[in-house]
Image (cartoon, one colour):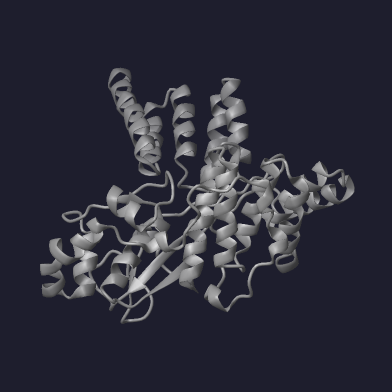
Length: 393
């Protein structure tokens, strides 16, 4: 599925996890300027962030390749044998889970992960088998969620290896390329992709971990992950944004300004950087420029994510279920795969007495849930609605 990116607009700060990825391998980029880093402000980690751990195989993974699936690797060939073992339900039975970004060994042990985690795990196993591969960033429609006061913009990556396999669930690109993807078939048509270097994939992983730690309140840990993301890929503009968020949330707004200035020097219309810099300039008392940037954000994005959803919540509090339903439907119309939108649409329909529609929306909330915890919550609520439906009718 997707690997997460955060963007906080208007009254809060922004943080991007996966956007703005470099289109060339990071090895060709100049080193990141040390002026963006302020190590003295953050407590060192007991175990430094290590790029080597991202793709490292665990003993269980080595045993899996050498013993458990060795016969089918011989019988089917390395490419088809590996892909069948990983992604057929009768085999490893991987599941999508966006709760946090796992490295290869963690994703294998848990048998779950977001799209970036599963790409990393697949690549680690393929590399061990000497299967050629390449990484791709996939252009998808904007997909927003919200967590802990943060608006979350999702990006997507996949990995291609071996030759094309006509009966597989994800097949894109050249005839000799098999692309492993986790989007539903209807979302994979006419995909546009951009090649990524492996260092960029490593930087994406580190940037995700930085944001996840920050949302959990671990600013020191978040800083070191974001710092190493930029060391790995200095062209990854989203990591500068993440670094700026970390500085501001740690009480260092002055240090947050220059990473964002750098982003805007490359992309003057970057919404994340404009939004965050507006907030930071306000912190620093530079009100005129702050307001100028806020106006530019509003010009670029007149109806920010969750605008209709928030209006729907206000209508629910006022017991105006008809208006709430309309607002939630408008939010769903521009972001159809957010479980929270469907959940509240279900409540609005239930408030209107339309239990069938409430059940349909709750089923969509369950279908689009991103973690086992979410699935359990929406499943229980759907079961309750099913019982209500029987009594009402």
